[in-house]
Image 1 (tube, rainbow, N blue to C red):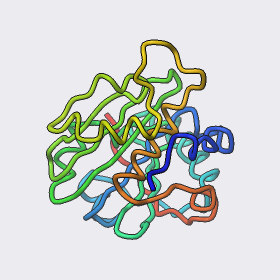
Image 2: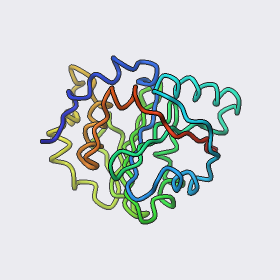
Image 3: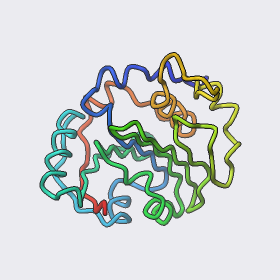
Image 4: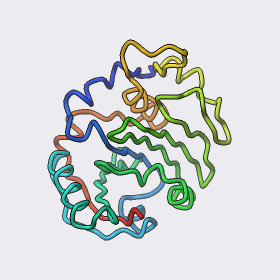
Length: 201
């Protein structure tokens, strides 16, 4: 059964340090090491739990003046989960599409200003891309392929403002629909993440 936006409402409440600005990416077909290699990354020490990842990411940002960002990775089933606190590499098309060769790539991002992106690519083809706050404006090779699912999940397609802003939780639910990977509090808190730094700009 497809999860809905309400099923991920906990994320912003329980993890405020990352809830305001993040990029979550799921890649099938590449291990963490292969992904780091494709992105030209530099391995770093592993980190335990999302709190330490957030602290290290902001320290890295200050150290590199935003030129390199920290990515934290773990394997979940057949997928590699990549978390970027305050990052956006996972939705940067000119980096993502070449890196997605032979792989599936599902990523969603939001920044402190509420600007967001959901991106789905398959083997260098952009299937779907849109801002979760404005789901009526979609592009890619199959912009309407998931329209029914998006409506069931709870993306807001009406002209009026939603009673509750659930665009970010809806992005998590859509990513789970596409990958079968559920992001949970336990996964975020208990995982020892493989880490690397990657050039952002």
